[in-house]
Image 1 (cartoon, one colour):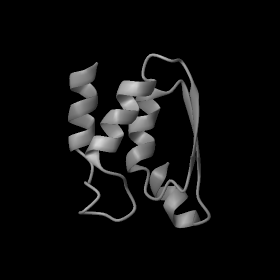
Image 2: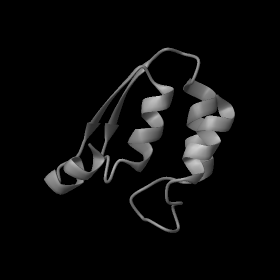
Image 3: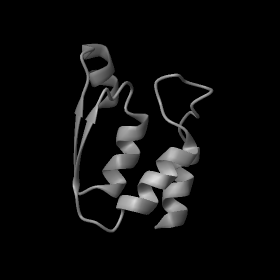
Image 4: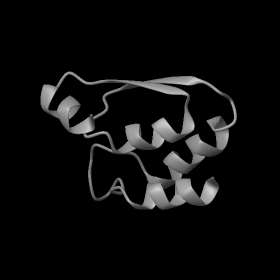
Length: 76
């Protein structure tokens, strides 16, 4: 599973490439801490859903919120 997550993390933009996401390291740290805990996640400010997609592989459910309708459409 860890190799799959690393591959997925590397397939999305890095923080310096796109201001609306978080760093690869933070995404991997979130995976390491939460992947075995069987929790749900609320993401406030999902932007284009890069991190939301990764969260969907870590958490049993993800609710993504954004005040920009365009970002929500892209994230879906």
